[in-house]
Image 1 (cartoon, one colour):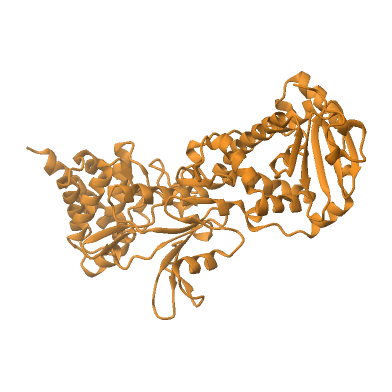
Image 2 (tube, helix red, strand yellow):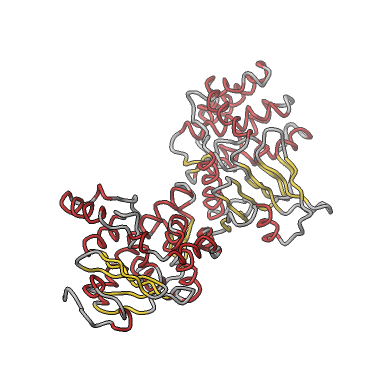
Length: 503
């Protein structure tokens, strides 16, 4: 590989000299106002004015340090994402640098995106092939304003350059990349380089100030440039398997209105004093969606529940975990044939999500009308089926089961989890039996018996019912229910389990 190409690029270097003529390669980026930004890799640092622009050459070791570890805050490497008008000299070396940088960017932006979405949500997320590169461009354009017009131009006319770079990490021409399948790594810096390389890079960086060489006109233009929408919010390039991801460019409600094809006369009505859900309604009574708020004062109820349920299974408290769990288990249950509402819009920044409104009667309302309703046997059978599939709901409050025709829909899945032990299964049974007393004390023992009967007849483990009848599962409900009714309900569970165990 040659180390210099003196005098080769007269079209790019007319009127220049010094280090720019000693570069191994030079790439040219046309600026919006007719100037040109020329950059390359060479043996020494230099910055030479061009008409309306500048030629910058950076030592090769420093270039590769930026490409691999962002040692200078990516002052040089950031230019590799811009679409070049031409590359002269050792073009192969230019593409080696650009592709190596693209791979690192994709891995680091995937790491950041997974952190934003959370562990249960990112498994359902996909990014457009160039989406991870655009995410880094967005970050850099906010840090270095002079890159704004350059990156805008790349998205307008040079997107083929980004597609070529994206193929280095997608390993194909796929349009969408599943985040869980893409490699990731935590961002690195100068301290991650070898000691010898770090010392050399630090010395070179001390004598190099690329920002001084940026034309003043380009800096001023950068301040006045409005970034294109994908650069303002790269989540435009991210989607979920069954829902849209909300963007910060538009309010959550506006995006929901557009997706549900209704006018802006919608209003939100809270569906309960301690519930984080709000029903979206029109003036004509149409209810297209339910909006869940995972970060509002009602989240305090989960902290209270965590205290009451000691030492039993604990609820999730963090908004991101609850949002991700609700979507994840909604999709898991749907894939197994359970009836759940369809997700519409998920906002991992504002901690909101919208699901289709289910027109049905909550089981909590039904038992107030018919305290010993046979539907509670069906609810027990449903829990047995869930446990057989390895899923526990944790929050089996009867208000989270909606009867719509012959089907029981499950909503509010933010506490769902794997049923790893008999304790998880027993807690589901206990909550369904004891929480119903809060809605009506009438026929509470009979409801518990129906629940247990349906559970065992559907193949549920009688040992889980017996476990649920222990005092420690009833104790968290003692403050909200009459003690005599609670005790009779507990005994009803124990009797149902005992009958099953008796030959």
